[in-house]
Length: 225
Image 1 (cartoon, helix red, strand yellow):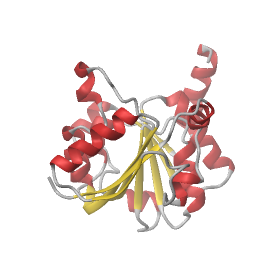
Image 2: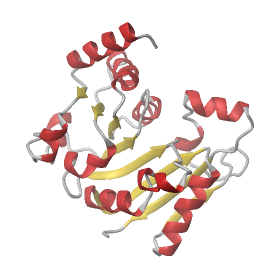
Image 3: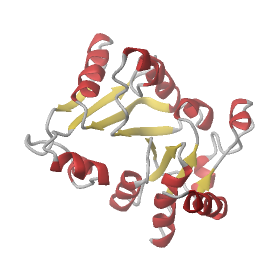
Image 4: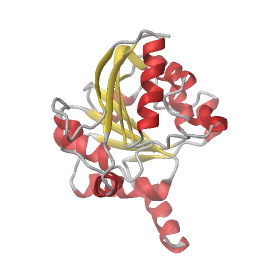
């Protein structure tokens, strides 16, 4: 994408009512006004589901279409990417979708304790190199952050093309005796995956499928840590 298109999208994001771009210092200092008040932003007290690393927002949008009775927030640091999801939500008048341009590591500064009912992590970078372990979205430090914002025994979903990421996460969950509700190493060949996993496919997921890569899925409960 050319720099002119990026600048145009950055500018449009500033005008979109469904995009929030808090400053890092604002979030860290605890003055982000929407933390603990997302029900007021949406205008209802419906369950709140968050997608981490939402990219173009394809999954956030797909879930919002499927469940209008649930509020969804997609988080990504790439403003030019989430622009697409925000624009689609406005074009389709989806009032249950919001996007936040922010680092995922700030999740416990964006949401209050117990404010989120579920978290989706879709096709994250597996960060295979050992020195990148701290950036894996299912490492222990990130899981601790999720436990702070999730309701007691809230749900976490991991959908990925990376067998490494699937196995790494499964190992951590088993070591911590967390409740694994569902595990599938190839959702399109093995039966039992929920419709949210089978009926929503991102651009990159379709590319992985064309290459014959299996898509894996984990669903687990997140107790207080």
